[in-house]
Image (cartoon, rainbow, N blue to C red; front, side, top):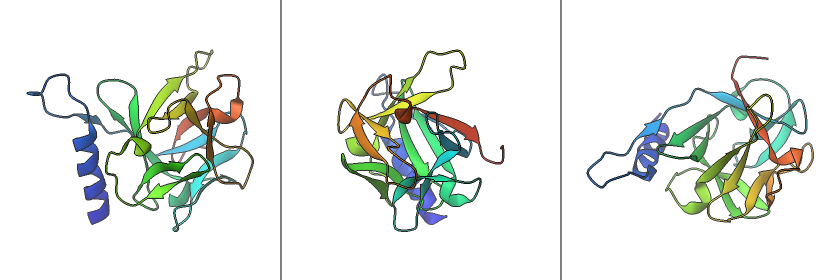
Length: 165
C-alpha cells in the first residue's frame, strides 16, 4: 500500500499544468486488462521481477493495470497492480516495470487513438524514445518498442475493465 501511495504521489507531480498557479491534476482510471488488439486473447502481463510480456488468460494482479491520464492531453503512465511500478522503456528491447514512478520521459507514454468504428484501440508511444511504440511482437515474448506504424495491429491495445470477459 505504501508503494502505491508513492506511485500516486509521483504521478501527481508528473501532471503538466496549463499555468504555474494551477494544481497538477490526474484522472484516475479503473483497473483494466490491456489486451492486444492484433493478437486476440493475449494481455499484457508482468512478473514479480518486472518482466512484461503477452500472455493468454484472464484475471489476476499480473494482468491488471491502471492507465493514469495526465491532464491535459494524451500523456499517460501505465501502472501494474501486481508490481506497483511504472511501465518503463529502459531501451527499445527492454520494456519492464520499474518500482518507482519518477516521471522520467521513458515512463511517460503518449496515447494515440485509432480512428476506427470501435474507437477503443490505442497505441502507446514512449516519450523518452520518440517515434517508438509499445509492441507485442509474439505470444509469451517480452514486449518491446518498435517504430510506430498505424498499420501494425500488434502496436494497438484495448483497455477492458478487470472482471469483464
